[in-house]
Image (tube, rainbow, N blue to C red; front, side, top):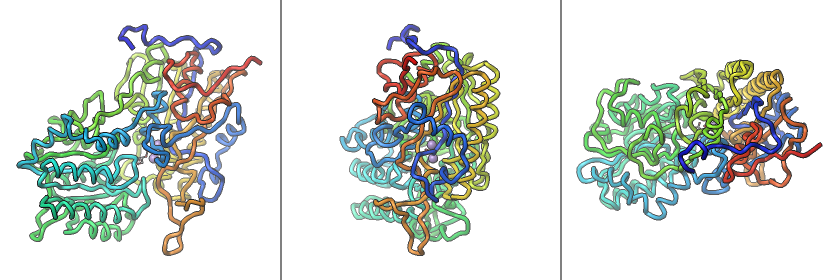
Length: 559
Ligand SMILES: O=C(O)[C@@H](CO)OP(=O)(O)O
Ligand SMILES: [Mn+2]
Ligand SMILES: [Mn+2]
């Protein structure tokens, strides 16, 4: 594409009119699965979503939201918000971070780049610190990638390595952090045998330590900073596996919320604070939950918490997490180049756009939607509204979250006639689903359905069009299953709760008084996925999608 305005001009759709208000609603973590007692969506009262389903096959269908359809390495990879919203917004499938890191490690190219060379400069005199999520969840990071990186760094001169491990239990089963830490410890022991001083230095649960997002709660990042950089934490252990086992016995805790700890030597001294002259790599490939730490590590001017001591380090991210902020400046693997997103096209074609969610998902319908880019394309045509999320709680205690507030603001945006597209993420089924609390998740699904109802009523009033879909599954299956699909029990005979996303497809529904009677889902795209949605809503705005976009899901038949 050239840089002239013409390059952005979208062709008129031959049959569909312009000027309709289009609501694009993304239910986070709302997949489709057989009804049963562990399917919180089927158990919940969801009259609006149920009624949309009655519109099948013309106005309701399923689309793929996991694996290759969203640029992940394998069909066993569940979907997630980053890849899901990237695909929804970009209308094309990009090889995503997980895959790009796999390729860079396999070819060895990761070690030839500027980012690795930059951290390597510290290997002679300093310590290499690796900070990130230790699990095989594949949403934010992968343990096998960390192990390869450890080995590769040691082979290339790292003599002293410290891992700052965040425990998961959200993309993987709660309790699995013990096993992951054992695997990591095994590999570190092998490195020690080879003369590399390699150890775990600190740890903590991802939701309580470090991995906050969209600046919802800086205390989370501060707890991590204290442990990782300053070597200060409420709990001291000599052995990280023992640390996890012990801390898991505290009341009301889980892998996700484990208290921060540091590993100390025989004299009680922390083994791995981050010091001047050290190198740091944050090994998560996914952006949202690393951006805040990246700012703390990289920015000279920083007032979000008192860093106490700011070490002079060489810092690189596994990827660059924010292309617009160029954050971090150095990185090991180039991120997917998600360009020419639907958001940018539509704005450049005059479509006035409103986007809204609460803090914990705000960046999903802005940053991820726009190809991991923060900020507006055209301030005059866009308004992004963030409803502040509650912080410091697990969302099962408030399963309604801010669904009502999101819906109200969106309703008002629709009724104001100031926007052509209103785009929202309703987070409940995902955020509460991740807590593993089935009862609360059922309430969450009802709250999301209520939110959809309010938005659809506003669309009805203005004669608009709606498109309702989801970014990946979560709440539709809350139990770990065997290959036959039967619920798995733990050694006490209790079901194993599934806190993670799933591999299930997600629904997509279209409708509203502004939808021409002849518009219906095509039948020749049975494998359609999230990346087909952008062309679909571009059509609903009266435009043809760019030719390299994944094809639209709809056709217009003459009645
Ligand atoms: O909470 C998150 O970070 C992920 C799960 O790891 O969920 P989502 O992709 O829905 O944001
Ligand atoms: Mn999501
Ligand atoms: Mn999620």
